[in-house]
Amino acid sequence: MSQDLLHRYLFEEYEVRGELVQLDQTYRHIVDAQSYPLQVQTLLGELLVATSLLTATLKFEGSITVQLQGDGPVKMAVINGDHNQQLRGVARFEGELPSSSNLKDLVGNGQLVITISPEQGERYQGIIALSSDTLAGCLEAYFAQSEQLPTRLWIRTGMVEGEPKAAGIMVQALPAQSEDHEADFEHLVKLTETIKDEELFTLPAVDILYRLYHQDEVRVFEPQAVAFRCTCSRERCEHALLQVGRDEALSIVLEQGGIDMHCDYCGSHYLFDGSDVESLFNITPPSDTNKLH
Ligand SMILES: [Zn+2]
Image 1: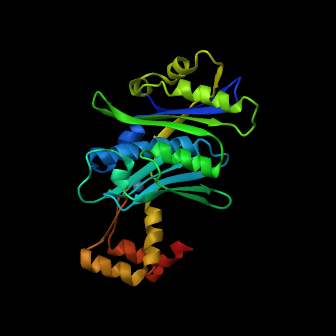
Image 2: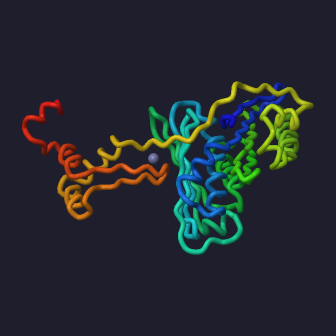
Image 3: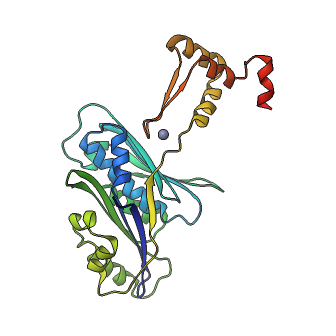
């Protein structure tokens, strides 16, 4: 099975950049972590593609979280990705889901929250109302508002021979603007929108780019691998338990025989028994305390 890849490309003659991402294993990982209904899987797949395309625009080390929240059956759906293209995500839903995968039917009245967290420096958060029936439409509105660079996205999910597929393309004008700027961008949008789902899911990236832009000169950069990766760990759970406090933690152990911390993103369980909790809070016999220094 081939690796999931993100390709960045530029046009020699136009001030426009493009990105193409094709996700098989990463998408499968996300939908396998929990038994999501198909509509929720689709939504997560779209968010996954969107987050991959967005994190590829980062000019620094850090992460981007793309989150949908609303009063519809899907209360929350989120994907988090970093500059290494390591992604994870989760969704919460309740009640009966509509049969359509229309964004507004699923999420209801709500918003799209995009959080950009550089490893160094301040966090930036953009919040926009769900003004479109599609995630791509909402993201285009976000780009118009935040970066003011003409941006178009094509986000597709589906099944090919029983395997879930998610893929997408983003075309964005670069800040340097020539006179023919708008016409160039529209020309490339017209070419890009001829892509068919089947092609996007099954053709190698170079074939897709040739199929779309063979009249134009395209410079394609080395692809970047995309993978599912959860950032949860036993250490992080321990940190959370320290926040809970010793008394509270020990009372959970008394009530439930131990503490089972579950990660919604990847399905991992972290188990802490009484002695784990005791040593965590440093209430071990005196002979052992030296180890902590
Ligand atoms: Zn996890």
